[in-house]
Image (cartoon, rainbow, N blue to C red; front, side, top):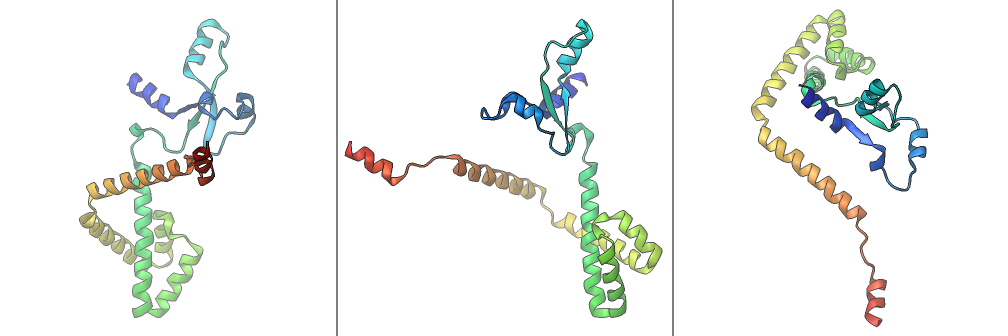
Amino acid sequence: MAAAQSATTAMCRISTTTCSSASSPRALLSRPAPAGFRWRPRRRTLARTRRTGRATSRSLVVVSEFGGTYEDGFEDVNKNIINYFTYKATQTVLHQLYEMNPPAYTWLYNYVITNDPLDGDYFLRLLAKERQDLAERVMITRLHLYGKWIKKCDHAKMYERISNVNLDIMRQRLLETVVWPTDDTAAGEAKD
């Protein structure tokens, strides 16, 4: 457990020495930490401080609090999926009501303007207080859309798509950072 935790902690750390050489460590430390990050001393420094009573090194690390560790699970992903299917179900119900029940469409449309369907469960709880029938319809549609998505979703293909997008991003970044020789330098070398 401790080995896994230290490995995870090591993955979350970004040393100030890995930053570009153009910025000095003092300048990096004087900047405020970006949103979602906090500064904290390394664990080895804390252990040395406890043993000796004084800190021998003052290196700081940036710890990301956005994604957490892999051991934390993927509850945030599950919540986002549910919220997205609530949004899709609301859009579907709006399209159905537009054709079949214009007064209910107008009411739900105005409700969606003031309440965000991407809030998922909270959106449905408030909707159920106002119009139980529409809330049930959105919930049933959400479950139906999720069932259709599960049948159509090819997890291997999704993994491949993510991998290809990552590769394209890295390829684009490489092309941006490579310095290509210009025709002037090639002509200058030919004259020599």
